[in-house]
Image (spheres, one colour):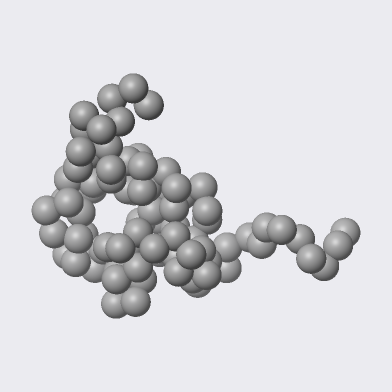
Length: 92
């Protein structure tokens, strides 16, 4: 197997970040809490300030560099957009 794999598994240290992204992707109650107060919602997931700031901006590259799974970043961003602006993606 090549040492230059295009995908690296997330490190265990990124578990809280990926857990939060999964909640944003899948848990409507968490999404609603995040939209109202992203600082409190991400703090309850045990994220550090840098991770919380990257999530508030949905900075894909920064999140992936922190070990976030690219699929979770994409889906969390999409779900947040759908929740914040429902009519913009009604045909998605």
